[in-house]
Image (cartoon, rainbow, N blue to C red; front, side, top):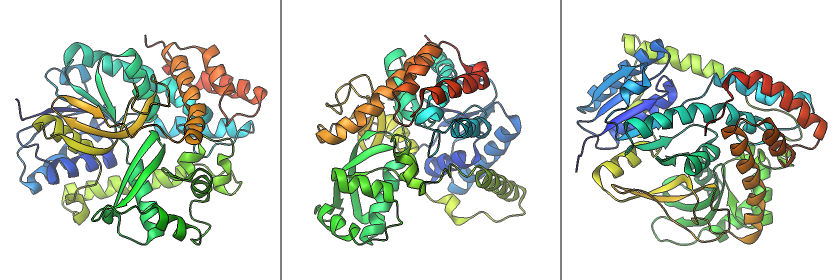
Length: 429
């Protein structure tokens, strides 16, 4: 068995995500001797991340080769793993996804993975991802395609149905849920184990247990949650009290899928902090440039594992380590038996040299499955609209979405966002 990887990282110009991956590859996992090919359309961002990767690899004393290219197809031959962390003009188009529906009276918490925003994120993203995957099918058909990009559920569903690649999506949402539970329980996160199943950003914790003893922590959580600060994630806690299990991964994400999700913002259309995001990105780029120039000190946390699982999946599949990964987005095929088979679900996975193996935790409680089934239908129609570039199917996806409460608004939003995203919408199959 080959024990060195060729990892092709598409979208490597992303400074924050690139740093996260480097931290885990160099300071948490054994990927010595491997080659990492960074791919991005922005040569300046690409050069910055290559320099950062080489600096961190040297600090870790890890023998890896870091290459760069703006030519994706040139990078792919021989790849064992292909990572995707891309988005098209992310902040500008996401802002349209949020503000145009808001103008027409549609309330979205984020406008990213659900509602009209989630639809158009899907419409413009899937053609690009299928371009990547068609190249993988041709040039490195045995590679594992690891997706980090949103909308995770819809990307993995589309590839499961229409592509011939091995694919898994990874998201840190379950760790956010564990953090929330730990906050209420007033315990360190590392002392808590969680097991969840459901949809990406809409998982439900089926088990919450003490890491050392295996004791069920749900009774204590219910006791402490009842008197906890009511301002802390009120929507998720309303669902917890109604359905009996803890949902992931925070009010803004959960609220994307629900007609009453806007209540998470106290009835105000707050949305994403685009200005704050731009400010943090600029500050982080300046920090990276300072470290690379030798005028700034490298923060200690840059040399510590991030806790994400991308590098863990690579190492497990490379070295046949048969590792349990807390959560992965996979094509269902019965992993959650009371959700449709042709859907992407998020469940625990086992990774080894044979690939990615979903771990079924059995059926979800019936009321939760029925709640998720509504969103499942929305996601299925959105994927069909995107892969067939169908405006008719896109309208149907809007009209069954619980976030959309007006046919007139649905049609107006469809027309406006379709024109904005027209350059990116095209049939994938």
